Length: 431
Image (tube, rainbow, N blue to C red):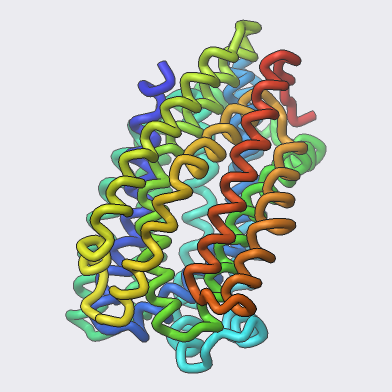
């Protein structure tokens, strides 16, 4: 049952990641500096968006548990207020993208990259409303256990992004600006097509929607979502801060970091799909008043097992994987050094993301964030900084710190899942 929910989510996650991979590949063949600039701009963009995207995961327990309890009005209120919350956050995110250049300069990033990185952020910013609305609808459909509209929309958007990248980056010689323009447009393709394909599914839940929309319920959804946004942000910011530290080592390190994190994120999308499925399945079971521990354990085994395959690929084929992204010898050499370290923490990465999904479905929304605070910010990031800049390890030291962080977070969350399985779940409501 978990895999039946997980595989379409994983395909969708891989499709979303495919846009970033295509952008990186297209710009990467223009040289290490343009690729580093796009990587820097993408890092700023998603470092800010991650809180809002994480907050929308409040819809996972709200809708999944209501659906399991056959509470149709509660499902409708969740969908409606999720879309309202998404659109309310969009203007703030757009404004923050226009602060990219001074923000990255303050964070000590190479001046030679800031121009193109800033252009990328300001251009991609106009796709934020589409991205946020799509994310709200995707989480809503996911809570209902429906993925077909999302999967089809992602496939179409990837084709649009690929064609637009080829035309704008090479045909019109727009470079990073062309990549950002393609990304922004693709977000609206995602949102529009998903809404159109899911209209019949969503319509029965949104009868009388004008009367359902309320300020207290919206604030309640924000209250549920904020801990999830913070939890997701602490993890994402740790990787973004690692990217900033790579920036302090120079453009070659930034480019290598972009390649390594692209590969790691692609592999991460599959257990992330399992995590989403686990959240939905556990939420349905709790809403229906049924036992959920077996579904949680199954999801954890599935997520950890999947990451074993990517670990082997990273350990055995680092040179081949690096050459898919770039022809630059210095970047390839650094990627070959870093990928075996990434291979070492794949299992922990799979376990921790699935454990978060299980806990989210079980209504445990606040305490798990402390695992990220301890693992990344109390242990992994300080160790990575020390190894890189004091012990002289350079880039490998940064990734060794991330490995420690992921191992710590995984162990803490597994213990929390075991505790919640004994204690039972919590029904989550907006108001």
